Length: 394
Image (tube, rainbow, N blue to C red; front, top):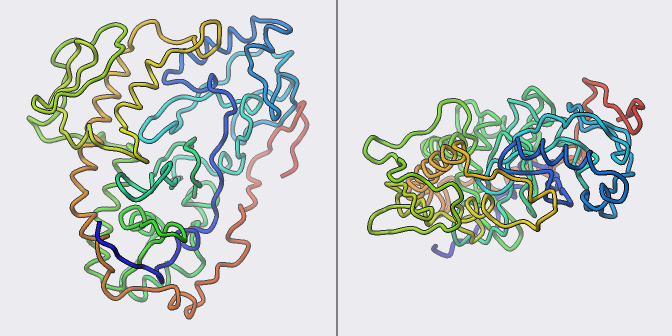
C-alpha cells in the first residue's frame, strides 16, 4: 500500500466517540457454534452438585458459582447464586464470537466475567455495532467489522452506531452530520457515516482515522462500497448470493466428523477430509482478519478438541447440516467482500479530494467532542433486576 500521510484526518474515536471494551467471558463453555450444546452444558452444570459444580464452572476472580449479579439488560437470566440454581437454561442468543463467525451464547450475567451491560441495553434489531478488527495492522483484511449481533471480538473497541434502543441518538460527534450535509449538498445519515468509515478507515500511529471529503461524487462512491460492506457483514435481510456458476455447493458429502481442512487452488475446492465444496474462489480462502485466515479459524472453532470431562467437551457428536449451510454462506460473504477490495483501494490509496480536516471540524464546532458524548446515555425504558431479585438502579 502506498505511503500516505493523513495527519489531519479525524480520528474514528472522535467521529464515533462512545466506545466500549468488548464483553469478556472468562470461560469458553457459555459460548458454542450451536445452541443445543449450550443447553446440554447448562443441564450438566446444574446436575452436578457442590464441588463438582464448582469444578465444571471454571471460577475466576470475577465470577464463581457464589457470585451474585443483576440480570443482563433485556434478558431473563437468574439473579440468585448459581450454586443453588435449578432453573432452565436461558434461551441462547446469537453473537459475533470471532471475525465472521456467528455463534451462540447463554445470556446469563453469572457466567460472564465482564458482560458490558451498557452494550446489552442498546442491542436491538436497529443497532449496528462497529468493532475494531483484532490485531488490525493495516496489512490485510478489514480494519473495522460491523454486525447487528453483540460482538465478543477482542481486544479492539466496540462503537455502537446508536446510543439508545430503537436507532435513537446516533453515536456521532454532535453536529457532524449537519456539517457533512452542508459541505456535500445532500442529507447524511448516521448509517452513511458508518458506511463511509468502514470503507475508508486507515491505521496510523495515532489510531484509526477516517478521511472525510467534501466531494459529493467521491462521497457517493464511498457510500456505495461502504453500504455494500455493511450489508455483507451484518448478513440481515436477503441472503447474499454469488452469480450462477460461481455459487459454492457440496460436491462430495461432508464426513460425520471432519478433522482436517485444506484448499486446492487449482480446483478452487475446499476439502473437509474427503468432503468437497466448490467453487471456492482463492480470494475467499485467502481472506484474513488480523493476519488469521477466516475459513481456517471458523473450521477450527468447530473441530478443536476440548478436554474430556469439561463442559466445553459437550458438543455435537456429528457435523450438523446447519454448519454446512453457514459455511456456504460464509464463503459467499468473503468472496463478495473480496470483490470490493479494488474499489476500496481506489478510495484509500490517496488523500480524498476536498478533504474535511480536523481543523475544519474544530472551526465548525464539531470538535472537540463534549465529554457527555463519550459516556453511555441513560437508558431507563425498562426495569432491570439486580442481585437476588432486587430492583436495579441504573
